[in-house]
Amino acid sequence: MVTIDIVKIIGIGLVALLLIIVIRQYKPEFTVYISLIAGILILACILPKISAIIDMLNSLVSTASINSSFLVLLLKITGIAFLTEFAVSICKDAGESAIATKIDMGGKVVIISMSIPILAGLLETVTQILP
Image (cartoon, rainbow, N blue to C red; front, side):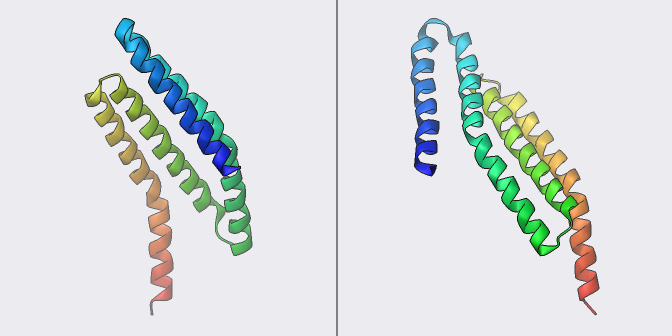
């Protein structure tokens, strides 16, 4: 159920927040670990949903007779975006915004480089349609 999943995610986030607030007073270096553990727990909660989304997209691709390599690329790009955002958040939580900015820029460059085949396929399709 969707509502139970979001309640779990919010619960994990709020418990982590409370732990961070309390622990920051005594051992501030441990707050990054709590944030990382909370992120991993939340990721574990959403993995089944991600799997269901991938299965649904696969069935749509097979029904619509779309090149499955484009779907694989889109899923990889989405995964890179999520992982990049996760790493950026961890760096910002640790107070390392300079590293976070560089990771963010690197993720964007990788995403753009991976999207070139999709753009090429789109341009090819458009040129075939136009007279």
